Image 1 (tube, rainbow, N blue to C red):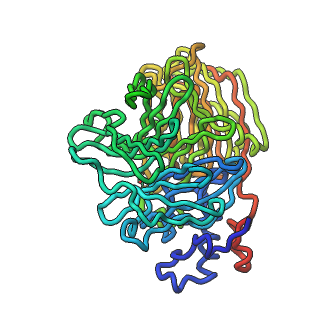
Image 2 (image 1 turned 45 degrees about the horizontal axis):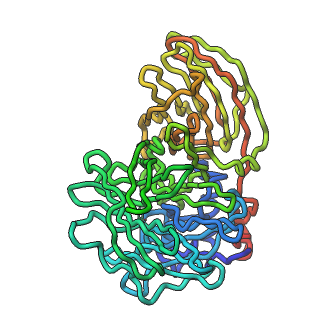
Image 3 (image 1 turned 180 degrees about the horizontal axis):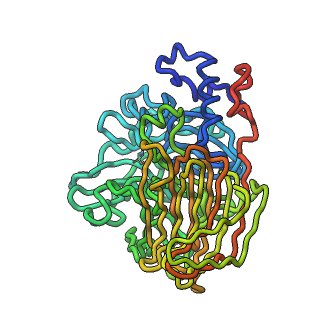
Length: 515
Ligand code: DQQ
């Protein structure tokens, strides 16, 4: 499928005066983006500009659809639209025209905020939050042409205001499911002074909603004032609620039981979904294979000025499969479809290293490509710390180190880049060793994106901005004892953009189309 840039609307405000945006502006922007060492090669993002939350995620008629919060006016926050891309495999994507834009009606004149997709008697139906000033309104749009163009419901909003009786801190973001003949909807909210509280509604037609009660209520001091983007779904014999809490912005999950008579959720197990500090506002869906897939927005870790100048900001995480561990905790791993990108392979096994101070052993003679996948199994032994170092030019490095005394993994970004514009911190979180006492790390490194899955239980997603990302030296690091690297498999990964015109702007308007 091909769309002209104007249809896709990626470039209209690449220059501050959109009427003066010329082909050479577009070419210059795309050339800069194509040469950007921080630009991921196999994580989804549009050709340019700002994105945030995934929206409307679904698989329909075998096609995967990813909508996303999008500002076509530049690589900074602005009036949010819904961008749209489709894929046969969640790996290779085709850009489609913007699905939803603000206005012209007053109810959503300022932004189209996050929401979900349901198929209502064969009709694709989006439920989103219309933004008008400070007013947040649940709204509907439908498509009659297979999800390409969208018509807003003239009777929007479908819920006029938050329920009376308490003061909410926010009323936005939607998760909808069906039970028998009834639809149920959660809207992200919080009760002022109390805590996060996703509000539960019921409807028979998606257009008329009856308020029931909060699905559950958090404690403001512990889990924040407002739970954005609640997502609620069955998994195995439990139910799962994921939330994006404000102000902490660390995605949490609860697994527990759901009483389908009383429509109350009783959390039994609470966990951090991702410790990295970059992963936010995830949304899941059930695909046609019955897999629960989830993806989230990877925020920038560089200044607003830096990403505005770069011409792109935000990227989607890789699609992840969710499952339940026997102890009720959430399991997570990347989808196997990503394996189709695997190229050159390297392997190491049985490497033992001892160090009183931090000892370091190179894992390969030659640097690896900055778009790669690693699966590493470590036995911390009696060491105090062990892990990996990603080494770049100019002494820039990122440490991925397990601390035995605290049982935490730390992502050390203090020397990740020379630029003072970027985050320089240490991110850490608890991660349990396997029953055999080992640590299995599954890493996806892609330009400025670093996703790490630990023992298929928790992820650490980070953004790093070294000056150059095409050559990475990998080292094994050990301190205060002996640790063993049992096995390491590495694959360099191909770019998902098989159409070079997406990144190479030279030539005509035609060459700027996407297929
Ligand atoms: N992002 C959207 C909101 C949501 C927030 C606005 C979470 O709907 O609450 O872009 O990142």
